[in-house]
Length: 221
Image 1 (cartoon, one colour):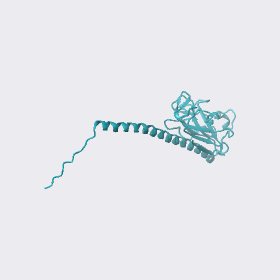
Image 2 (spheres, helix red, strand yellow):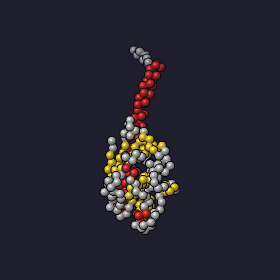
Image 3 (cartoon, helix red, strand yellow):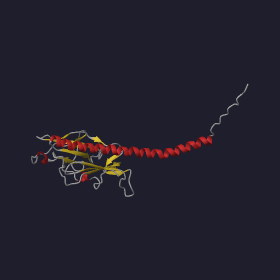
Image 4 (cartoon, rainbow, N blue to C red):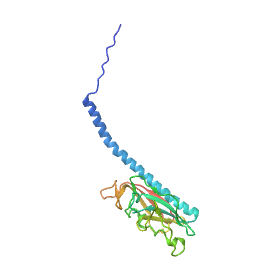
């Protein structure tokens, strides 16, 4: 009869276990920021596509219904959704004024419209809104716009561009670009979380509306 020698197993020592754990912690330290950065970049594209689709919808509605529509960005309203919330309004003839065509839609967390007007000319060239002249009757004022049962104030409380029945923008000579960046609002200013030494964002989503046609153009770094 033959006997097999007893197999002897070797356990890991405490030092070896600690070494493996240390390596795992170091690897995780590199992976977590990379995954978080990837998530924010995906959110930026998601938010940009959302605004682009709203602009396309506003233009198509103006063309198909032979009316005016407006792409509206909530501005300095003193809410957590400032420069992060967008809607489309439709002009209703016969005294109806401006009415919601879509609900207010909010960008993903960590994504905001850049308040730098050199990058977001859309904010700087917003027409007076609501517009008395839109109804064709001088002096007739349109109903106010509301956000969460609160009237959106004139001035910096919103930014809007109006699509005409032809599909082009009302003030077609003025540039209309919206830049979405990774960041958050502090006061009435954007704090960019991914920026270069000059403070400008290194990751952005630019949506440009061509004034004469209302066609949208997207550009990324």
